Length: 134
Ligand SMILES: [Cu+2]
View (tube, rainbow, N blue to C red):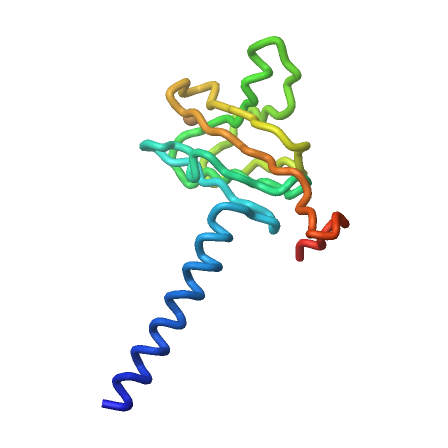
């Protein structure tokens, strides 16, 4: 009985830790972020990635087809901030970091493939000075 309660308390503890860190890290990344290309919806996973300003972003292509990562600005009035060209199967493409803002992008070869980067500004502490992230 005491052991069962101990186990339950431990599981509950891990659950709370998961909620705090799992949800927190899921929404905001400060270490390099990987986005996976897929042959099915949502095609770019995560479809919408929220990333800290200045964080490098990598796209991996584990599919059997070539894909591109092209900022929508390249096809509209611009600016064109990134355009991978064809990324072959098992290839990858990286962007060193972007200023805060929203960056919708797509695959030039398969217009159905669409993704979006949401770049957040630097994290401010309560005293107003910049906070170190890793
Ligand atoms: Cu594609």
